[in-house]
Amino acid sequence: MNDATTNSGWFERATKVIPGGVNSPVRSFSAVGGVPFTVTHGTGPWVFDVEGRRYLDLVQSYGAVLLGHAHPLVTEALQKAVARGTSFGMPTVGEVQLAEAICARVPGCEQVRLVSSGTEAVMTAIRLARGVTGRDRLVKFDGCYHGHSDGLLAGGGSGVATLGLPGSAGVPRGTVADTEVVPYNVVPEIGSEVACVIVEPVAANMNLVPPKPGFLAGLRRACDEAGALLIFDEVITGFRVGSGGVSTASGVTPDLWCFGKVIGGGLPVGAIGGRREVLSNLAPSGPVYQAGTLSGNPLATAAGKAVLDHVGDGDYARLSAAAATFGRDLETSIGAAGLPARVSCFGPLVGLLIGSPGRDVAEPVDYETVRSVTRADAYRTFFHAMLRRGVVLPPGPYEVLFPGFAHGPDELALVVSAAGEAAAEVVAGWSGAPPPGR
Image (cartoon, rainbow, N blue to C red; front, side, top):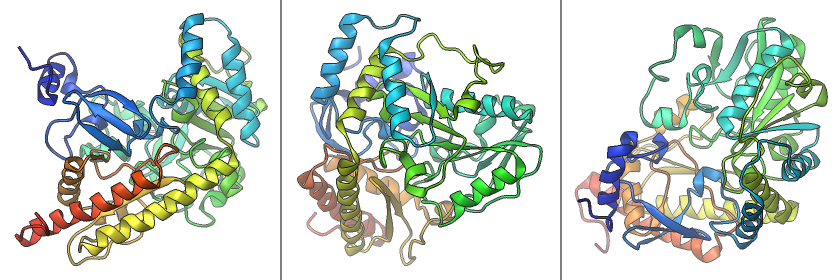
């Protein structure tokens, strides 16, 4: 019988009934080695495993958790909602209220269709764009991840990059025949056969790559000239970098948005937003079909509404300022140990790139830049050194860090201190000398 008190015991148990022992590849330790720990609960910025260890969590459900784990406002909203019923397959008050909250915060977003995941939101947005334009071709950017639907895994970054996959087996060639992959931060030529251009307005699945000045505005102009729709995939950035997302920060309004993560308060959710004239093409009012039994789930809408109601522009500004300070301190601490690294920030999103000895880490501008500077073995050593010090980073070098409202100055200082020690371990491994103080 497996030991139910150890992480290795639970992972062995999981591998018998779950492929690879995980329900999403990014949770595996394939890129960093070792056995993933199994979480029992979380509170604020902390998570706890089956062995009773406490870890400071910078993953925060890959950005879905904004206020911290088990925040009282969210748990109270969920307790009230669950007492009224968990799913109805009928219109509910909560789904209307969440849709209103999203539209009120995002200028230009007039209607929202709720779904159950970011992947589902993107699938629907692509189908809608094709239905509206009568065209088939779509343009995406190398390293941007838009979920695991067949036509969008090419050049997908994130878990696809972490696992070294060229897309995915099982995807027919015909499915991706109408997908064009182009470099990020370069405005492509868009032909009359293109239905839509989909982009992470801040790329956060090839580590963190902010848009160059003029890139998003250039995409807007190019789409307008070609009669194509512009889709912002803000599953990560929506309601994390600010109330109105990147479209407000950049002044560029897309035709469609894809949201997820934060708008569910940590529960499964997704949404497609856009102008009324475009969204009206969705069934039942239009010819583009989309459906979902659990769409607008009352628990997810209650949790998401509680989060959106709790934070305002001033809160986002303070969080972004704290993240910027944290990013500078983190890069300084790692660099002082002799480990080449670059920390990038956009709002509260923090990207950490670890490079090779004797080489400066260039500012990332696209997926190729990130791949050229990323030192996977160094990240592997750094990851486990941080884990031993009680800090959880994403188990792969292509994800970002998610400091949130639960991470106070003391917690972020703990990360900075641990990072300096972990960096010294990496450097000592290169030189063969023992790390200082070990």
